Image 1 (cartoon, rainbow over the protein chains, first blue to last red):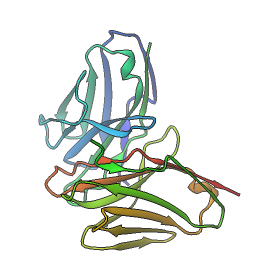
Image 2: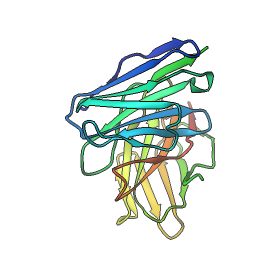
Image 3: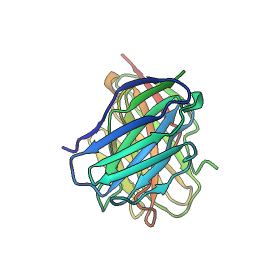
Length: 112
Length: 113
């Protein structure tokens, strides 16, 4: 079974703080993704990575950056958290071939 | 520009009846379609998929139908069970897209006993 884990299930941060969200997958997948889920907006892609040290912007990259130093780990960074970044953050991974993505349990981030 | 649309935010069905969830897309480059199920406070889990070379794919109680000319797909759940109550997301992928998925906004299904 593919396992995607995220470092925290719930996180509360203050406006202006730097926030790190970590994601680890154990299936040697090449591609990893960060989404945010908001009511009525579905899942929106923030960034993705198709190889170590490679990254591509998704649909809503503003205010975020990512890091992929090892194949199994993909980090999402909020350089200066703002209240409009309060959301559910979901990490996913997939190997080559069919595009089924496997998701982690999510991190519910609240920025106050 | 919403490329994948789920126009029904919610659907209520009685246990044992059929649930039909609908999804429309606008991008003719999409060639692979997926349905995900999501419970509160959990990540989405993959349910079923269909390639554009097919018009139907079945897995147990779940069947996905694809109408390419109408750019429409649907998920049928028969018979519906209370445990099926969740948010269902439709997603689409284009062959040249780094396996990126474009998701719809979701439909909340409630199956009542």
